[in-house]
Structures are given as C-alpha cells and as structure tokens.
Length: 88
Image (cartoon, rainbow, N blue to C red; front, side, top):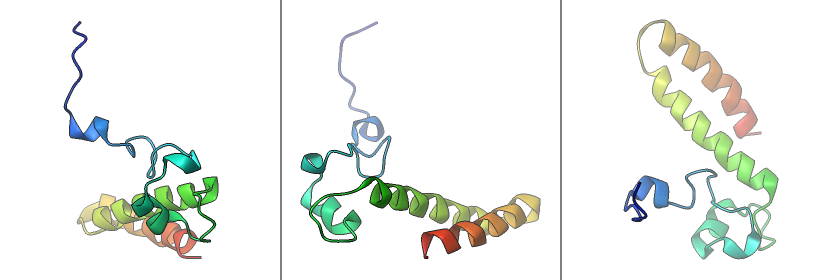
C-alpha cells in the first residue's frame, strides 16, 4: 500500500459522509451556513443537517420515479412520502 494521497474529488469533498461535512459549527463555510442554517443562528444543527440529507434522498427518489416499471412506481410512492416529510 502506498502512503500517497488521492486526488479523488468525491472522497475529498467534506460532504462525502454528511451533506454539510463535519457537524462542528466552526467548520461550516459561509456558503453552507447560507444554504443549511434555516433558523439563522450561525450554526448548522443536527436537525438542519438531517433535513439536508433528506432533501438529497428526496431528489434521488424523484429521479428514480421517472423510470418505467415497478422500480419507478415504488420510487414514486416513496418520493411522495419523503417529499411530505422534507417539505413539512
């Protein structure tokens, strides 16, 4: 194994695990705060982070719902449920 660092842009992104990266308030960029800090308190809470994650899942389900067949129908049903949670 080599000790070289990879230049894989996907794994180098801070949001690879979570939409906003680390949940530490001081690690959020101004762009992340503007996008995810819903109550304008200057930090991204666990709930705000999870709402962002739910939004990503909802968008993916919307894409899958466009497919024909059973997979598309199941994705459409799941999308409708997640969309209600996401847009409460």
